[in-house]
Image 1 (cartoon, helix red, strand yellow):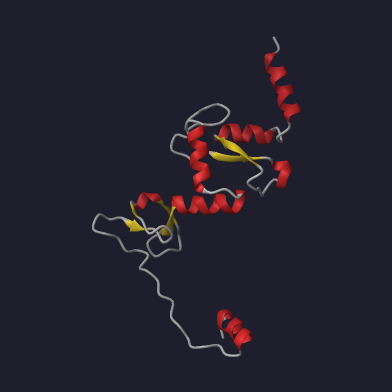
Image 2 (image 1 turned 30 degrees about the vertical axis):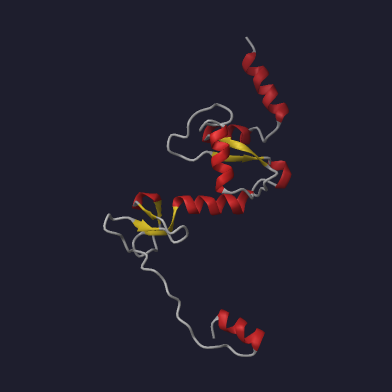
Length: 157
């Protein structure tokens, strides 16, 4: 007996009838060669899907936008609407240096002291940073005093 039938048997006393899981053909393409995202149901160019070694067509079932939305929601407690609004308020660039993302997504910067280094919540989130600035802030361990000392060092003559 599989796990789901066992759980059903424990709850109700009967495992119920076997059922089949219906799935779309993940390799299916439309007449223009596009693939349909499993989450948002949009037909998109295959370049919008991440590669996935175990998949029958070599591509993930979800588009990159849906994967990104799921990750930022789970990791930081914010949604894609927040990300896009913040990106627009920062005029499409890094909150520190202003550089554009050049095709890559900007990193969500969050306060590591609030919820810890690996997790975050909506209260921890500060803005969007490019990879260089995100690494720099991380190397200074989000310590304002260290950053001020670095500024003093750089301003010396």
